[in-house]
Length: 248
Ligand code: BEZ
Image (cartoon, rainbow, N blue to C red; front, side, top):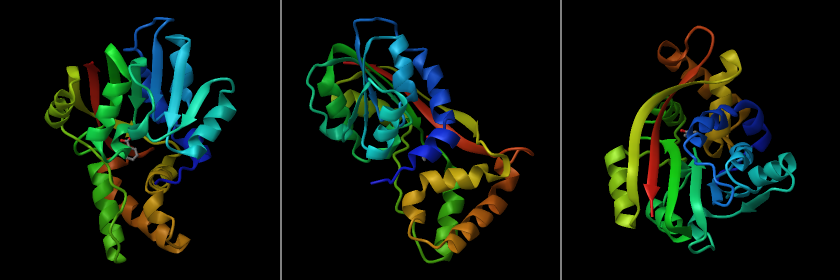
């Protein structure tokens, strides 16, 4: 499992939640609905979901993330939990999730669990990495690791819209919208933006390397990606998103 640096995430990668605000605008307002924020991270969107309902639960597999969320938003209901093993049945009106599903390898199990916890007519609204998400970043990272005899062990699930639509249907969820699109995403911190991002999200691959090796990887990646992803003042990650709305 990923060792999340919750402080780095909160300070430097809050764009993840910022983009989630757009997704949030699709959540209807209804004080009596129960909402689950699946993969809530440090809880920014879980907290924002209180604008839509008074009954909101945030769930994340990372104790570090949930620790930070509890510290930031005391009094809210946050749980450390594996999304594939959620204990509820017919419980939530809405499952919301931003930038989390791509970390979960067993999507069939995940969607079965989402189906189970939703009430009849309940809705899934989620967004995560689509096919070819961060393709250039992954390619250069892989090439750098290969040069030192390693292969990446961080695995992501980035499906096409067609693939995900049929997975939803197989699970019994009725897709209302399944859309994939490019979302070039500026990274904070000027010249350090790319290395900060890589440090955070590929930490499982980097944690056992010396700082010297890590620096070499960052330099190689920056060189290889400069033409495509540096816009003169900031790094712009080659994000692609899939947005899903589906009903039980
Ligand atoms: C994403 O949000 O697309 C993402 C972030 C970190 C690693 C992989 C994907």
